[in-house]
Structure formats: C-alpha cells, structure tokens
Length: 254
Ligand SMILES: [Fe+2]
Image (cartoon, rainbow, N blue to C red; front, side, top):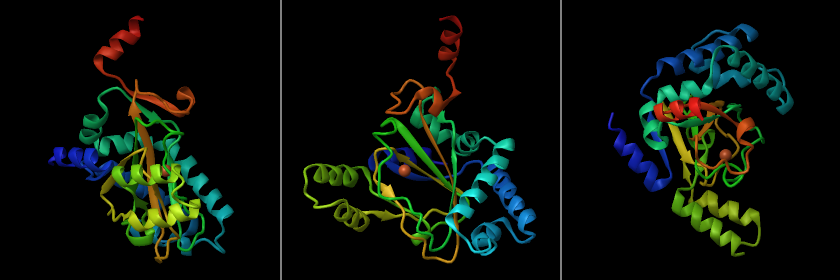
C-alpha cells in the first residue's frame, strides 16, 4: 500500500480515509458484537446485516434503552478486546508515520451506535482545545457509512477560516455557523474496511440518520507520548500505548 499518499493527504487536509492493512482483527471484533446481539435477540444473519438492522430488533427504541444496550456491549467487548490495539494494528504503518513510536492512546474508547431518525446526533464541534491539538482521532466504521448515516467534516483550511470568522463575530449565532459549516463540509463516505483519521482541530458533526440502516463505529484518540495533553488529565485520559527503545531505556533508569 502506498502509505505516503495517505500521509500527504492527512497533512494537506487534516484528515484521510485509509484502507485497513489488517482486517482480520477488525472482522473478529465485529463478529463478536454481532454474535452478542444475535444471541441476545435470537436473530440470525451476517454481521453486516445484524449491525445494519439491529434497531429493528429493539422493542420501542428509546435513547435510554440504547444507552443501556451499548454499555452492555462495551462491557462485554472490553473483556476480550482492546480497541486501541485493534485500530492501531489495523493501520499501524500510517499511525507510526504520523505519531512516531512513542504513543499514548485514549483510555476509554467508544463504540457509537446511531440508529435511523435518532435525534441524538453529534453537534458541530472540534475536539481540541478541550483535547490536545496534537491528537489524532481515529474513526473506524463497522458498516458502510454514507450520506446521513455517516458524518461531516471540514478540512483544516475551512475549519480554521470558519472558526476565525465565528470568533470575529461574523455570525449572529451558533445556528448560523452550523448552517454554513454543513454547507461547506464534506459529507463522508467510508466503507467498511477503511478507517478515517482526522486532526483534533477539525470541525465535524453528524446529522439525523435518515437512512434505514444503523451506523456503528469505533473511535479512539492517539497522540505522541510527549505531546501536550490539552485540558485532559493525562493519567486518567491516556494509556501509555507504546514506547521507543530510547524511551524504554531512559524510563527504566531515571
Ligand atoms: Fe468529536
């Protein structure tokens, strides 16, 4: 795989959609989730089918029921898998080129489930400055994501320009900023087998999923071990994910 192309794209835009180099572990973890749902709701079908249609299995779907449902899945998942390891090993070449070998990963990664017509969307925001500006956000969909089933993002130039206009009071309200952002944004299409990586300073969000399929995704943040942590408390927000030989040696002795 020509990884340099994706590195250059990431540097130019602030994000890149990278083909996964090791899909086996992603497949295995996706099967684990669909098997869990399949046992619980006594349904059969491929992983893809079960995940896309699982909103049809939950009786009278509500946000609090969904919260409980996802928490149960995250609890079970965490007994067997480390999501930061899964995403890293699926795109290791890309991530090591971006971050170097000394890496901190987010301690509590997320599984996001967005079912059709749910009003629980992700409002327009950028992760930094609450999170570190030296962070990369990874977003790995477990089903094909397109149109309103996916989410939208503004590249680094558009994010920077909209945020500075907002700070200079060129918008009358946040609502106006959001409307302009959605107009200028790229509405991403990310198929299963790819991962999106984006800089924490980019504006992004999601709209109501108007398709008839559910969106499922993993997300984990990574940064270089020695990069500033933003407003997060480093010890509670990050794990030490990997160390270079020199860091390993020095941390044993000093
Ligand atoms: Fe975000």
